[in-house]
Each structure stands twice: as C-alpha cells, then as structure tokens.
Length: 428
Image (cartoon, rainbow, N blue to C red; front, side, top):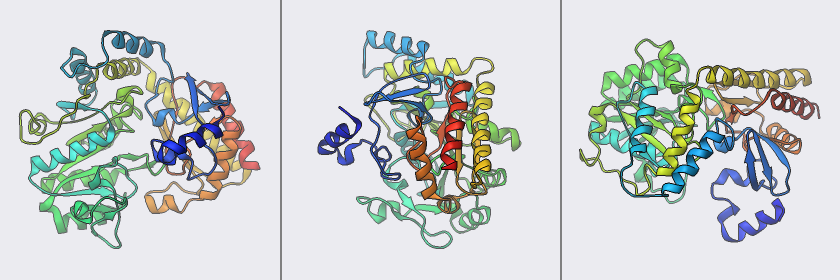
C-alpha cells in the first residue's frame, strides 16, 4: 500500500491516523510518510523512497538505525525474555552507566517515557520540598502530564491556563509559566512566590521550539535563585542528555558556570537507544523520598524492561568511545554551516545553531531567544522548504518547532547531498 492509502486506512481506526500528533503533518500539510524500514542514516517509506533521516526517531538514534552492537544486544536480551516484572542486573548496569556520566545525580529511577520521568520528577520535588508551585517556561515541553500542559497568561507571573481540553484549570493553578531567557521576570517571580516554589523545570537547550539555548546568565541566575529560596532546579534532558555532549547539556553549563549543577535531571531518548525508556535522578537525599523508601509514590510494570535496558546500555557504551562526540559535533556543525551558506547564497534570512548531534534553523535573521521570537520566524517559508526537501529525499521534522538530529551514521556525502538539496530549495 502507498503512503496515501496507509494514511487513509489509519485514519479510520486511529485518531488523525497517527499515535503522536506531530506525525500527522498537520503543521506542514501533505501526507505523512509511513516508514517501512531503516538502516544507518536512511529511512525507506511505503513507496520505497529513500530519505536521509534528520529526525532519528526524534533523537534516540544517535548511532543511526540498526547499529550492529545494539541490534545484537537487543536480540540476545529478547531471547532471554521480554519482560519479568522483577529486578535484573542489567537495570543496575544501566543506572551505573548513567550515573558515571552525570555527577549531579547519585541515584536514578528508570521509567518508560520522558513524560513519565518529568511527571515523576515534579512529584518528587513537591514531596521533598513540601511545596506546591512549579515554574516552567513558555516553549519548553516536558511531556503531556496535566500540570505541564500550560501556556503563558498575559503579564508577569500569571499562572497558566490549560492548553489541552480535559485539564481542569485547578490542576494547573500552581504552575507558573515564564518567558525563556528572561532573567528579570524570573527574579520577580521568585520575589512574589519564592517560599512556595518547589521546582523550576527547564529544557537547557529547548528542542521543542526548534533549538533555543538557555543563556548562561539565565541558567546561572536560575541556579542562584533556586538555592536562595530552597527550590529544586530540574534539567529536562530528555532530548539533550547524551546527545549534545557525553555528560548532557549540564556538563556544558558546568564548564561555563563555576560549581554549576542541577538538583534533578530527567533523561530519555538516547538512554533507550530507540526503545521506550527514560529516567530521572537526583541526590541520594532527594531520591530516597521515593517509594519504597519514602512517601512519594511512583511505580511501573515495565520500568527497567530487560530488552529496553539492553538497547540503552549498548548505545551508551558505543557513544563513550574516544572521539565520538568530537566527530559528531563536527559533522553537525558542517551541516549547519552549509545551510547558512546556502541561504546566504539565495538571499534568504536564515539563522542556525547546533551542539553535539542536535541542531536547529529558523527563517529569521537572528537566533530566537524565546518562544515569541520563534513564532515570529517565517513559517510559510519553512513549510515550502520542508516539502522541497522531502521531495529531494531529505527527511526533516514536519514542524517548525522541532529540533533536528545528526547521527554517527551520516556520511560526508549525506551532508553534502542535504546542503545541495537546501541550496536548490532556497533558490526555488
């Protein structure tokens, strides 16, 4: 069946024809590509068209698709059993591997999705601090837990209103939504509510408004304010963890801010290698508030799944090899520089940025610093560019607001082909 036929069939039995909204291509228009197989840096759709893949399952496929060491580990684990509902040695091995790379965490709890990890981290922060209010930033996505599906209100320190039906206003009455990279606003919010704030949750590089970095002054001030007021600073590294650097985004800020570390960390994507697996971690003092040791309840039948942990462990061991991130960062930077040069040659305003194997670009003359400036970029041009690129065999995220990902499997020839396709698309 073709992509069109499969989409029509899917819409009869699945809302919108997809199991996660952005896959439906509603933001860009057209028909989603139904993927039949993948290998290395490539995807093949139902029409057997090949694409160079810069979505990478939205981040996990840092080694590319079907890496031999990962496939072997998964096959071996699957042959031993798909699920036990009991502890395994591999869970401990994966936890040890993560903790060895993230000094800010002393213990970690494995879960099944980034949403579950962020939701559980917030519950733990509230339980540990005995406070109710949380701070998030407009444009940062921390999964679809009710308390986090909030948009900003009008004016400073306005508590949010639900952005999804089915979330009662009282559920988000303790969620304070502020502007990303706005230091004075954060200072005023803490001045008003500092004694009530349990947690500030932040994407240090926001990948759900494409690619927007938290400025060093912004992150530094968040750390200072949380320390001063007894709130916990939580880094949501579901996307950036082990993707922008071996130690995640927090390791990059630690190089720029003396003594910096978040209180809590949330991980996903790369630590599962493409399987449903995520985690949250903190100091031993905080983590021991979790059941069965403490009063904060969290559980999961499939948490620490033996096949998922095998996949994640094999992935982490590969990316720890010498020179991996240097090579990946160079490759990603080469792509970004090529896109900038192609746009300049076509006289099209375009800004772009990257870190490690994560990148983003905007049809705007300057890199956005917050959600409002992302929204001001040229969406119509992005949509035209997206379709020209996919027609040329380049698979980008089908929405202006999503970051892109390069894998170790992308070759120089793949990067060159992508830049050339962009050059043609931008001149059209």
